[in-house]
Length: 327
Ligand SMILES: [Zn+2]
Image (cartoon, rainbow, N blue to C red):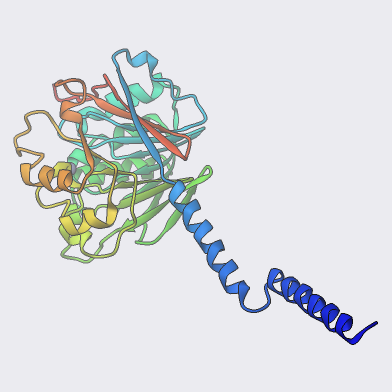
């Protein structure tokens, strides 16, 4: 082989080795590969956005069939009060049960829908418009665990609820902030449970963040700005607005973190507190969320909202359910 031929062969061999080294990630190409990988991951995350739709309203309550394999949440109309049902397969959570006169209506509705047991009954705080109806629930249904804060224990409704729970040997738990409860293939975290001596009933509210696959829901009870300012918050898809849309809740700073696509206000029609407040509604709307109100759910009448989710998409419908017992 001539010297010249040998030199050409060496150059070709070197080129081949160079190309192989480049392809195998030598000469720092790893760096670029890693970067393009993380780009891919970022794209994947951004495609995980939850699609939320609203379907046409349901007039006939018989059409509300909760025997499905989806997550079902109903934000009930119970007048000037709160009551929210969460159901996933056979597991059930009830957050609050309306005023004293609403409890029996809530029991009837649940029984009509085939619900006889509640895994977690949550009394967010001691006020009547949240736990007034809870003694009826405890009396008529099988309860797994009853969650209630420590504040407000001297109130009549608090005493009635706890006495009824003790009578029926139901486990009573005072959860602390950060506690996580597992529920079917979902979970919920207690985001706030203030228990300092001077905490108001409203701010003692058990605030619940419920997560099911890619969807997240935040239930504020009657928590006000003090609670909102007490921690950082995750972005959620749907917010049960604090304190019936009062001006003392839903601060801009809080909404900037929570960024809900939909915000639901449980509030009584023409209530004497003039809730929800115009200012709170304005802050909610300015944050870009869609506001739904139980006092205007069914056209301009009252009604409830039935949310269903497969964990990736959410659908919300107005339903003609009125469990207000004070009429
Ligand atoms: Zn309230």
